[in-house]
Image 1 (cartoon, rainbow, N blue to C red):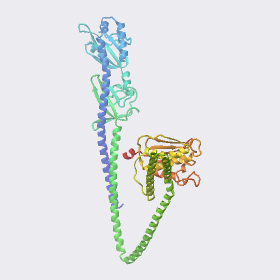
Image 2: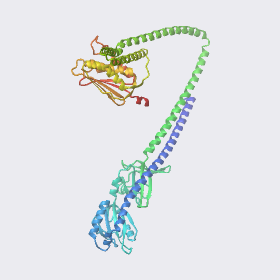
Image 3: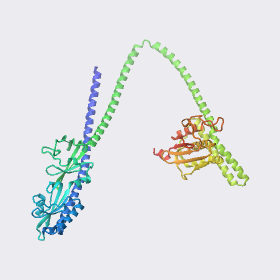
Length: 582
């Protein structure tokens, strides 16, 4: 390996190492920033879940206090009204969705219960002991008197002298509370002082225990699933293998709830933070590699140029003796090239002239087709004007003469467009009122439609619809399609021409006839393809081809399909608003 090549390989390796280090730094910074944002979101969700649980439990505490002051509780202290109190407790438990409501006397014996519990004694429970001392007691767990997870509130019942004469105990089931918010986006659980999960929105974590030697949780029975914990940037991350409904890598957040004696904890999936950091690092690495590649290519190009210059100088030095022969050969080659350039210029001029003549020849074949419709309209309006003058109706004759003038101006615009087309020029597209163009086109063919006894089904929108195109060429397309539709219905029993506009992007103008349909829809837009008889008027097969080219220049389209009966031509144009937005 040469010394220069080794030097370049070393530089490339150092650059790649620098890019890797920069990408790692960007990933680390982006990951910590995203973890900070996730921590703020997780703390917000944890606060919301904690407030929700505390609020749900507080109403049961208020129920215990309320029932402790009820007259039925005072009657129970005197050994009376057991059945009435039981009905009251049952009604309160059903309405509040509590597991049980009980009255306990000074010995801890249950005197009345909503669920007919009378044999159990609660005198040894901490929450009843606290209530017998005149304070509000609370506790949670699984055991006496209910063999399921429950939260207990005990409110003291005071006698007339202010002495405690019993306590009302309200038992709250955790299943009812968990059902209201199970399956939330974040995995939230509440642990007691022993680290046992007592309430959670993930049922698989219920009664899991925090191990005594570190963080994490373990099931009460069986082997503990995979778990690992580490800190990064002041954030505690848990790596879990606890099932499909818990994240594999989660940010662990904690919040104390002394009001209910529990600790709220949440697991926030860090996968979005890693993806964001990975994306940022990838972008930085791509930019650095692109810059390095450009710099490397520039360096290699400069080195190649320098090597080429050295070789060139060496060759010039070696060939100094043969310079005269080379000059003679060069002069001969220059002469030959000048002759070739002259011949090429003549050929190019001939080719340009031939192209112009070819274009003019193609356009001359279609001029009669382009001007036939306006000429027919002018003839019709002129005949009508003569009839109106004979009848003494000069106003109607003046109106027809005005229409003749409009048709003449329209023919002038058509000739202008044909001239522009023949010289390969295109007028700029402008905003065109589609409704006005359709109204004018329908008006031009309405006389012929009436003569052929064709029912013309068209309703003008009554307001402008602005599209992208040219007024004259767009009207030429519509008149051509409508005229072809009239020709197609010449032998049909039912003759109906339907013209409709479908709003959308693009806009669609549908022209449907009741003729025999199109024999070859895939060939109908080919030049010189026609289904009319040879020698028939306007039967050269250029109309649809020209119309198709016009719509292509507007960014539109013409589609055709056969219906039952007849054929449907759909002209798609672009709305003017969409063009301006683009």
